[in-house]
Length: 386
Image 1 (tube, helix red, strand yellow):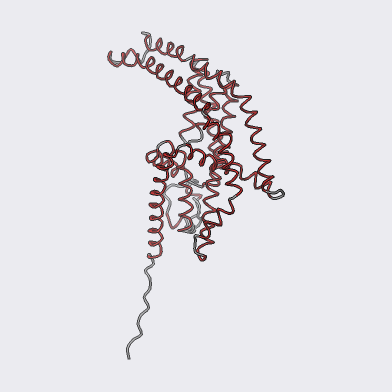
Image 2 (image 1 turned 30 degrees about the horizontal axis):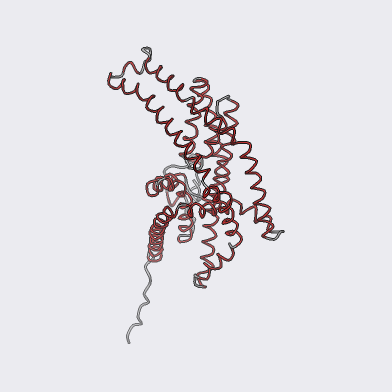
């Protein structure tokens, strides 16, 4: 009598390997699609600005619209939110634009005086650093302030011309005041229809999972956009207040620049602190510059330990190391645009990883951690946190 055939058992590693290959394929496909999308988006110019601006504005106002939509019709909720934001923007521009223009002119006008101070410092015979340099290098260093001053003034003139031309451009004015808000309103009004359209493209058996993944991705992008803007606004307010208290010239302009630069993680705080420190140094002396460095260090610590973890990290949930590598890769592949989209893309990859590989409770005894956040004698081997 023949023995019954043995049932073929699937190797233990096969499901996980299949999941890894699917995930790798999804990442490669996503990269190719994103690269092509960026290439075409750059070519479309104004259309891209309007579309991206509409998406950002829609994500920004979504919580307010949702809160009002619980008790009001959607059209009324949208009207209240957009009219209110429009009034805030008009009042803000009316109050800030004259101050910013005046301070920008004053900052550009102070560049020659700053250059003269640096040249005098470098040319003095009592300078302990310069006098010990070789003559060739000493001559090169002496020329740097004049060259840097010329480049800064040229950049400021070019920037002023570009800003004026951009503000006077009918297309830009139309995009900022009409097209972007209108597009964002239609995106919010038709969000349910758009979601149903994409849901129909997915088989019914996978539809619930696909909707959950899209919901998680939507939360990552929306949380990042709203959180980063809120953090940047908080940094700008703190920087302006600190510079005003320290009597640093052009405090409003420099503080707002610090907030704008803070949109780029890790790089932004330095981009905001360096101009403030230099202006304080040349205007008020080195004690003022030291106080500015201390103030920006405190602001950075408030952002890193209080604002960002509660506002941004709670939705994106990407570790600092992953943020650093995502920024480097994004900058290398897509340039400045890559710096802006790197963190949300890392958050989307984190969502996919979580879906493909659900969280498993792994104890400290299993991974045998070499370094622990708490003293090692206090770490429970059977716990899942070090």
